Length: 68
Image 1 (cartoon, rainbow, N blue to C red):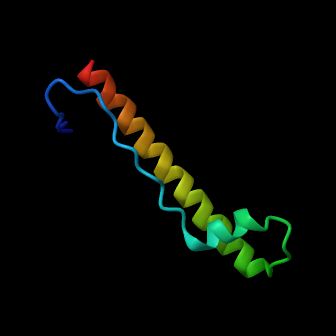
Image 2: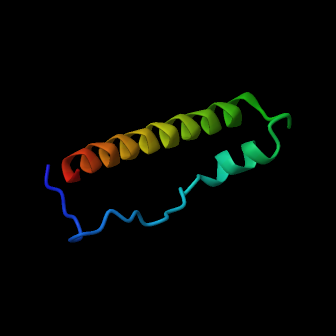
C-alpha cells in the first residue's frame, strides 16, 4: 500500500460519512412498520455501509501509525 502525506502536518480533514438514503430513513423512524423485503434491503445497506466505514477507519489508523 502507498501512503501520501502532507509535510509537517498531522491535521485531519473533516469528512462526513455518506449514509445511504434508505439507512437514513430507517434511522429517522426506527419503529416505523416496513415490509420484510424492504427491511431486509435496508439492513443489507446498513451492514455494507458500516463495514465500509470500519475498513476506512482501520486504513486511517494504519496510515497514522506509519506517519508517526
